[in-house]
Image (cartoon, rainbow, N blue to C red; front, side, top):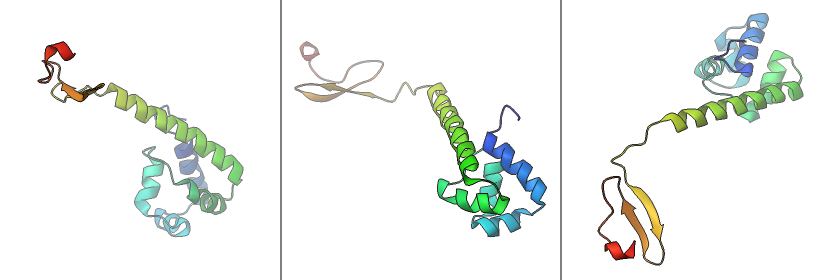
Length: 121
C-alpha cells in the first residue's frame, strides 16, 4: 500500500484490475458517475456508505469486510482533513469573537479591542 493512499482506494484499484471492467461498466453497475469512481481510486474521498452493498455485490466480496475497510479509510480521511485544517494559518485581519457577560459579544482583533470602555474588560 502506498503511504499516500487509503486502504479502500488500494482495494478498489486492485479489485477493478481483477474484474477487467471499464470505468463506464462499473459506474453503470454502481449507479454513480465515472468521476466518483476516479475520486475513490485517487484517495480523494470515499463512496457514501449506502453504496457499499452495491460495491460488495459488483466486486463479489463480503459486505462486512468491505464495511470495515471503508470505516478504516474514513477514519484516516477524517484525520487527514482535520490535520490539514489545523495547519492552515489564521487570517490576522479576521476578528475573533469573545463573549463578555453581561455585556454580550465584543469583537477583538490582534491590534486592538473594539470600542468598549477599557474599564469593562
